[in-house]
Image (cartoon, rainbow, N blue to C red; front, side):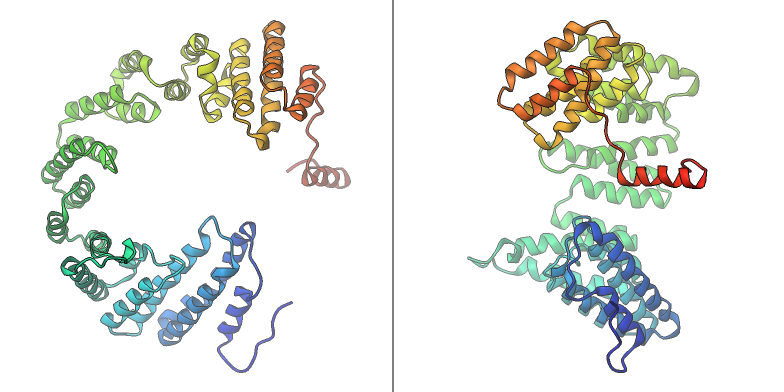
Length: 454
């Protein structure tokens, strides 16, 4: 039942309160619908920014207060509610700018919210806020962040305080915020000065190179990319920007008319890490007429790749015969260690031309689940074993299927519930999946109205 408006107040506030449903718990599966309702109210406020920004500011502040009050009544694993709150902050910034509010006060209030944020809604607010701020607003925000960064640089550590409150951590944090703001401002000089002050990283070099490339300075950008790659080589552990740097390097080499060097770099990367992604990157730089030869070259170079990556690559390139040869030469144990996200599409591709090999892949998926004791996926395992039985029978290898069942029985004698269902599969009489409620409803609807599924 909808609540009746209490007193005079802004009508949008009444709509806001109904949408927030105070006192009602919102489960994870209900969160998307709940946030959609909040979006409708937010849209009404956004319409006021141009015509009545002062009213919009007040409504946004009320909405933010309501969202924080609602946070404990919500289970949101997808983060859609947190994203919505972040959008409210940005819209609030826009409303204040439309009203001609003091940029320094806007920055001060936003940072105060960021400091007092038990739910983490403002953790990375600077990324979106940088887009919402106009130039004066962004300058004011940067100035105050810089002051916090410098204050942390001169502060002394306090024994007993949590790590998050120690000066070094705060300096690192505000340095990261400043980096985000400098990128938003396209302030290359400011970014470089900060990075050199705090310690240049490969990620910094990528950021500077990207800004330079956007200014059509590919030579300078390439120099920063190469500098970043050198830094990455010196820091083999921890976070690196290696992949981003190598990708940008090839793009810049191509722009500079050095396509052969870009191809050499892509080839070296493929040989180090053969897979469908590095193959795709490689082929971008291969001249069209040379692709068949380079494809064969890549297939030969990939033979020593990790099984998972090689199966993905052969599927991506539609190399079904090579895929069959690979599965044939792989042990059952090796196949069982490959994710079902890879083995399932491979099994489907091999079912018609090579049912014996498809059977081994279906069997591997079932064994992977049972050996890991993942009982909630036992139904999937039974489905995999059912597909294995069908393929073994089609290939005339019933004895192999019987060996599989015997192995499961011997290895997992205590899993009596699962084994009883496996016996039904072994007999070839497993009950088919029952249609869902909606499937039955659609069938009845089609029968009554004289038409099938739409």
